[in-house]
Image (cartoon, rainbow, N blue to C red; front, side, top):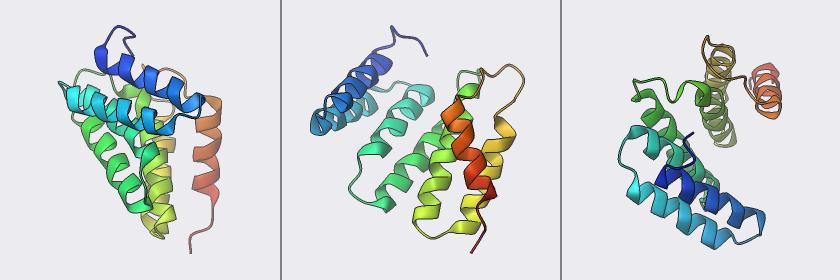
Amino acid sequence: MDPENPVVKLCVEGMRAEGQGRLGDAHDLFLRAWNEASDDWEACIAAHYLARHQPTHAETLRWNDEALRRALAVTDGRARGFFPSLYLNLAASYEQEGAVKIARELYEAALARMDEPGAPPTEAHVRASIERGARRPIG
């Protein structure tokens, strides 16, 4: 991600606020990033972070779905390394809602995207979460 991108800057600032326990400020910064997004990649990033600050599982699912939908619309490769995390988050949202079959499909999609050619390596904690989710029994 381009650290000079204004949406990325807002999200970094929001993550700092999270780390300091200022969750309301974090939410506001992520919402501002969403409102300032100028393309699908920026909207994907903002939606990814907004999903973390929703009052219900259903709203978290909605924002995780939006993040993935926006990433899928990016055609220039910027989203390539982000897909494992996006699929993981959406799978976890569906699992929390009790839709375990859909969750399993999404965990498997995340597994398939982890080692795509040209994508940066998937972070160890993301990889471990995807693998755990994909192994969980359905039902």
